[in-house]
Length: 372
Image (cartoon, rainbow, N blue to C red):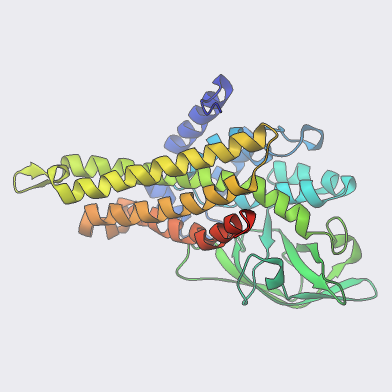
């Protein structure tokens, strides 16, 4: 297993790092956090021009057809901010779901627009009976003369306010399978409420007799679950790389603070309790990075291993979450000052902890794979 970066991947990393330094100052990131989109229109357009939104879109549909590791290298740098906005929701998860589930005609319709940033696609999956299992999807699509009518609520929809189209997971009448519907986010009867306590772009979407045409079905009726899971297996390690980037940034600012903050005439990094926190951060960071890039390497080398994906998600979620906890212990009061920048990572680590399954969910999946 070779986890070293290629020359092209180093170029991608450096380009993303330069973008973050140039376009995403601490002040800019704080401003992005207060917007419904999660970033500025300018940052979104520049990312589109660089080609990041189409990295996972096949070349025949206007994208770059990049490897998963190529994309992860970029997202690790975006996570260092953390840069918010629908980059992952649309450019990674949305693009992968359309690529896995859609017909060729649907791919021709959606993927070029996702790659160009003209469409912002977000998955509307989880419901008040929260869970990432198919059994948790209870919202039904009622057949009509022209298509379907949707009523119900989807919770924790990432980039809900920014999305132009929602990939809505529903059940049909009298069928067990899950159907994916491409729903115009501006449809009459559809409303979005942003949820407090999370990063500002996570929302609740309510459907009240929302009419969608029959051709809104992505792929086959009742056949949406398996292609969506294949998309998850590819998207999750990229999300983990984003968390690794966040955890690395938190570690860097904590180490720097421990070297420069003087108490009792000595840097606080000399104190054993502070050292304990920093060493724990190293453990979390390294385990997150290695499990993430191992999962990516297996996927890119044609030997996908669901257990590696589940492990990476569990470890990276805990690593980012606990890394922020340790950082706050070292920083004490200044760590909660919004302008300092640590709280952006703290909120992000909590928001992403549950996204696409929390550590407990993924550990259960590992246990099932092992037959226990």
